[in-house]
Amino acid sequence: MATTSKKQYTLVVTRHFFYNRPSDEREVSGTLEELTKYFSYTLEVGNSWDHKIPTNPRTIKSLLSALEKSYEIKNNGMTSVKLKEAA
Image 1 (spheres, rainbow, N blue to C red):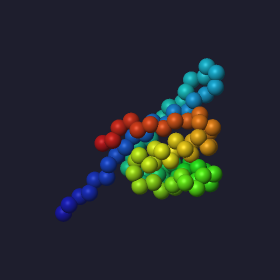
Image 2 (tube, helix red, strand yellow):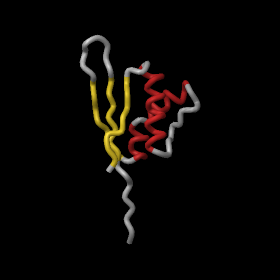
Image 3 (cartoon, rainbow, N blue to C red):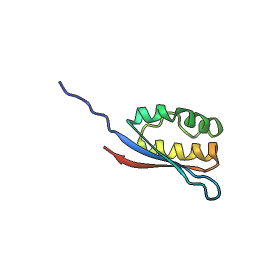
């Protein structure tokens, strides 16, 4: 019986604040499907303003791109998302 293992990703989400306040950074890990579900609200907000932003990206690269565009709309560019690692 063959087992299928889905690739795990870790994303680092950084919120930038004004003035000298420190940034808030958090890590979110999961499969592509889990990360899409976790960030579904942000993707929906981005899609509501720009219909080119997918709400169900098919690759981790397209998820990162969609999140960057969505956060640009939602938080005026004060949040960034980077891929930390893929296991």
